[in-house]
Length: 160
Image: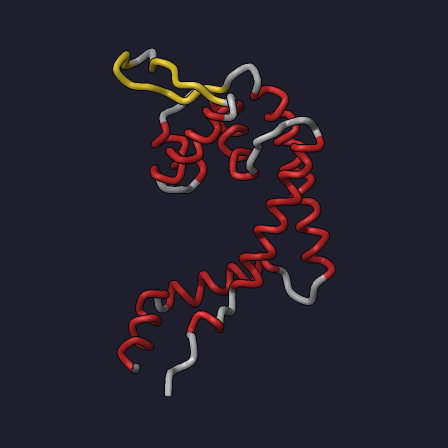
């Protein structure tokens, strides 16, 4: 007799699908405004570049709280969309910085407005539910501070 497929149980898949659906709806706002090829993950780095000026991929990754690898991939996608370019670092001619292109200006303006509208929408949604997702996240972070996810997974592996 074979064991059941463990991937058929996936507690957080509905959350992942919900977030993916929300991202798709956000991207539709940009598409409706005429910005093809835009991804919702572009918004924060574009706004940060607009507000703080050109910076290295490492600095941009730090600003957006993602890994260097993830930001490098995002910058590559934004470069392909014509939103950013590499420029020489004036303090170190060998280094390169990520800079906004002229095409990015309209998207940044929409990005800031969309970000604020999205935050207002999330606040509205949290008010309509018996518990706020932001509180759930804080509660999970506190539980994981007490005992890490890795420790918890390992205890289940050892019990198998």
